[in-house]
Image (cartoon, rainbow, N blue to C red; front, top):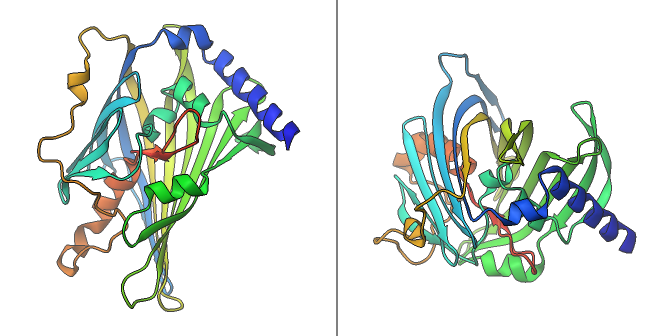
Length: 322
């Protein structure tokens, strides 16, 4: 156990050094990033059939996102794809999201980092996510030997994020760090939620996001991943046997602009919407019958723009956003 923890700490230190070093990263007070994304494939599976969509160059749904961050723990993101737009943010205390179908709503639990920022855009926060991880082995990812770090959310964290009939019963984060460069080249996080309705059978939702990071380039001395892809899998099961559904979406993304210590950025840029409702709307709730036709597109936007699972420096509290 001690060896696993000390090895993980060394790997995180090597990652921090490879990304520009702690001193340089600590000088960053705020950051801005703009990127483009494209839905390159999607798949829907039931117990009886599988429907696959391979988007060609013309048919692919394209979009983009803009991200602002400021210490400590403040961020704001806008993402648009396929005609839908999502806004989400955190003012350091409260995490919120605004979607066309649910409006503005707050997320339960403490402040947490943005998952998209962990995809090679924010080395310091990424390192903090793995500060208490364990090294569980090695694996070759796309021809590159990597160390694997594993971080599990503790029961108190899971309870803090659960709400009403939705109980988060597991959340695990894996980071794959190159043995050659020290950089993070693959990240996987998965969480399992149980929804128990009055008098009904429990329904389980497992959400898994695999992200592959590529094209690291230096921006003001800090190594930033400028491209990559993410595969999101939403697996729903329970109720009656053989009634599962699985939705799989794949996104390719590129970073167009990155800037640090942007003049004029202030706390006012991260104020939640005035019409924010207290309490969150479950992302895993079944849509009304009249809305089911729109659910696929909504899932593409909502799943790809989720907060990561709450990252807190000391107690690991994580559930990533977007």
